Length: 105
Image (cartoon, rainbow, N blue to C red):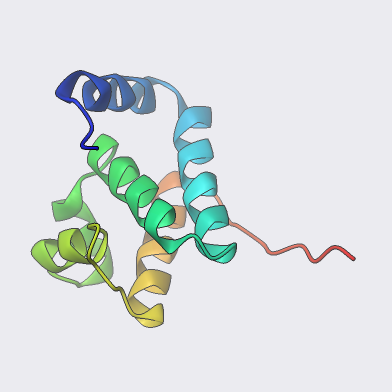
């Protein structure tokens, strides 16, 4: 089900005023990818990018064309590990956070 314009605007407005919310969106995307839910991870990453810097800025940071980034993070997209790593690295730098993997037994 596609997101409504109002919902996207709500996400964008909150992301622009609330750094904790932006970081939570990015963290959720990373957790989804790590836990094998690539579809949800890509969707959350796409929402994050749309609500923050945008695909043109991400293109400058990753050196991947904006249209390719949009396709990769779309429902049928299949980003390579290298591209996904590049995207996540750029977004972490933009947000000023660094994710680490903690193994629990």
